[in-house]
Amino acid sequence: MMDKLKIQNSLSRYLAIATLVLSVSACTFMGLDLQEDHKHKVTILEPDIHMTAWEFINKPLEDTLRSFELIRDAVVYAGLEEEYSKPGRTFLVFNNQSVLRYDSNGAVNSGCYFGREGVPELDENGDPVLDSLGQPITCPGRNWEDYPVEQIRNLLLYHIVEGEYSYHNLGPDNTIAQSLSPVDTANKVHLRIENDRNAKLRVNDFHGTIQSSIARTANLKATNGFIHVFDTYQRYGVQ
Figure 1 (tube, rainbow, N blue to C red):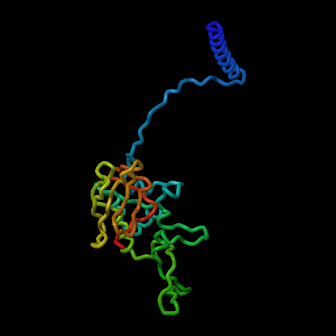
Figure 2: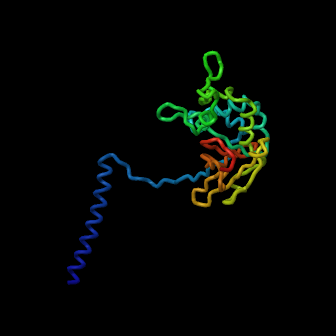
């Protein structure tokens, strides 16, 4: 019985060796090289972008979710270029789709700035078109010049926060920061990091808020502060 067991074990070992040899031979026959050990190079994502927030906004990108021509145009229209170059700031930068985005039917989305902030519809003479009650009919904005400069200045100033806020000094509880907005009733910004494995940066996430936003890309270290990128512009208020 023992001799039979030894014979079976020997046959199993010989069979395993033969299978390995045949596998190697097959790879060689098919022109395939045996896999060599690969030394994996470990790299760490670097948050420093080595430019100011204003330079970042002006950097051309093909990806519409990471392009900022429209906010750049707004900054120029409002005359705030210098504010995006000053140090010690946190910049909440919204991308192109935050300003102008279309639905599948071709209509301007009501959630983007031009869609939510309607402007008077004008006739061929440049006069407002009125409804049956004599009230101006509104339509989506076409460009920043459709809006008063002061309105766009206040919009942008709310997106610039005094002080540098990032993953280094924010936690799961809201930190209430001061924006540059001159509007007393809408100049605070609530910032916090989600307490889960995703650790997303959230803005104005508090009870009764009219809008809470999650950063698409956070913690970009500019030479004059931190940049957090969003798919929507920020609004402050309580329902």
